[in-house]
Image (cartoon, rainbow, N blue to C red; front, side):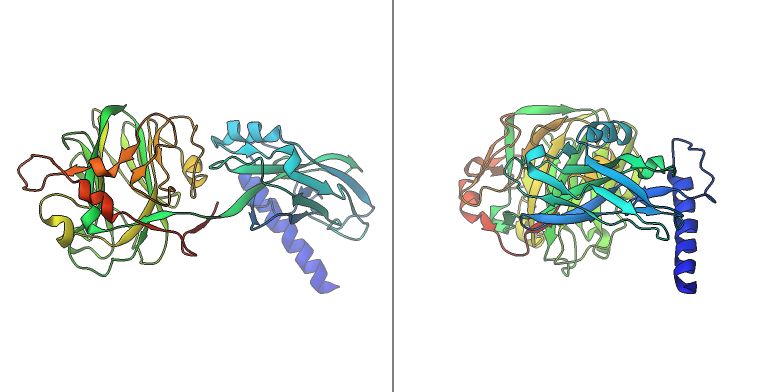
Length: 402
């Protein structure tokens, strides 16, 4: 009994500290008293619910910070309307789960006298047929009512199950001979912006600079250039925006997928890796008219000497600065109609050499119409043969749980 008592007291202290720190609404609880909360919400009300197939279930319980003196019965419910509230309060872009996709079994639970934990309700994802690709769905399960006089911690009244589906996707395996540029017929004017792409490095052991992508104006006068091992750095990525060079801190590794995100908010240039801030720098630029995408390093004879072995997919151009929570919500993909998304190449065609813009804004790329500066004299020459070297790949490496 002594062990049980110590565990319960420790829980009370931890929960008290956590919810005092996280509570932005200024509740008036005396944490020496009992209070109820949904299990798993101690640090964050959004909890990953990994789904490989349907049906898939998640158990939900209610806890007390101290043992109860008498039975308390609670009714839980799925309330999709809470997703809009959560998005508004946290600047996120989650979607409410379709009502036909989920069930909640045993919604009435009881914490018995002498206990601090209820029996379990069970949320079951039964179908993904109504899911839209690129959307991240939440299942909000909340305490709807209670038979008893206990306090409920407001910030822990609801748990949001973030449906994390395992997605198997196509990507392009970089090939030096395919390295070239596509220049669009019309620019995308950007003042504040976000660029994103996913990469899977395989060639980091090589010495010397390895440039693998550039997002530019038509004449390259303003560009975001991405290259590894510049100035003999050890597996670090240099992001050069309009000539301002930022060396990122992450030590990248071969054999791992990364989401790279580059945000310009009008004052700062912020680099993210997998939704986490890597580095930032103050920067003032007058905007960019994005109109040109470079695959690999195509200038002159550098296609091979600066070749970087990797896979890539999910290139996105936004006309606004994404928040960190928005970036973290798009580790696998995003909805093609997301606010501010101007161009989006999933590279999920799986064959051929035409890469479609998922937004429908008309920024498709036909790689047989690519071109590059072959002679290093500023003259672009058509490279139709580059289309013949596009290499598609889809295997167990190309999986993502969003």
